[in-house]
Image (tube, rainbow, N blue to C red; front, side, top):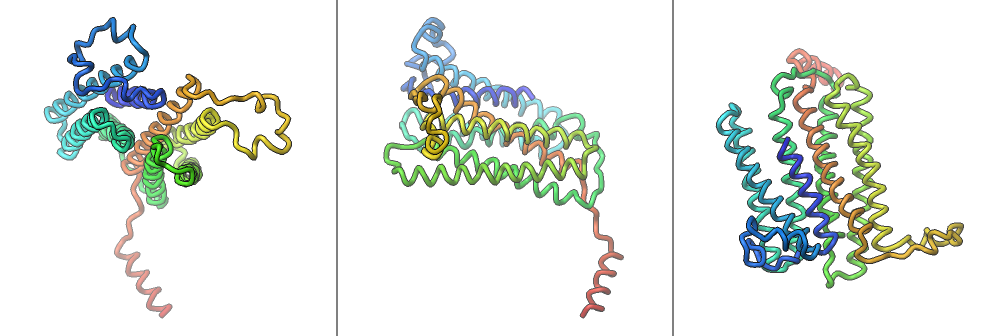
Length: 327
């Protein structure tokens, strides 16, 4: 749980670094202006330029998460009886190392593509941390499976929602990390696919929530994440609209027609690099990762708590008999 909480904070800080264009504020890696990052002068860190403060804080928090992940691996291999869980913690350690190297190479090489990949791996690590926290929780081993004929449908829906949530984050990186070589047409395509992904994800979350509330309303461990997904999607849609508005202004169809004389719209000005712009965009990115983590938790809980109705040999024989009669 500590790893999950720290990783979410890092996602927020990392997104803010990108939103404020502070990613290249420190030109060297793994050092910070030639200093060991843990020995960088506090006076320069706190009283220096804001972009250096953001980027150096990002690096230190990433190092802290790496240490917590190492501690998690040690504890798991000393006390966790399930072999697959122990290996999962090792996978988390490998992924956090890859993420650190990606961040460093992005600074050294100055490649925007590496920044985009870095942005894709971060929510993936967060999802893995959520999965580890879920399978190592106390209720996981104590829970008993409920046999239900609707279990398979819910599990498939939850897994699909999890996959779509991650794909939507990947599509978001194409909109967020736009290079100077990207044409207007290419950006429009990225934006359209991102919007379509939002619609598909919203529909899937609605389907999952309806199925949980209709067939599994007594399962608190399923109802809570399902309702949380609905709330997060609502917040995310508002943040997405706000991110677009603060970056590009109101769309043409909104400024025309009956809204043409709206005083607020007429006086609205997009202020490049404003704090409102940075905070709204950062929140949009962070909540997207939170949606992914919640979807992962719901999918794992459904797989642990629910079991589909097995087809008995007698049922198979009866089905063959009916098929023969129909033939």
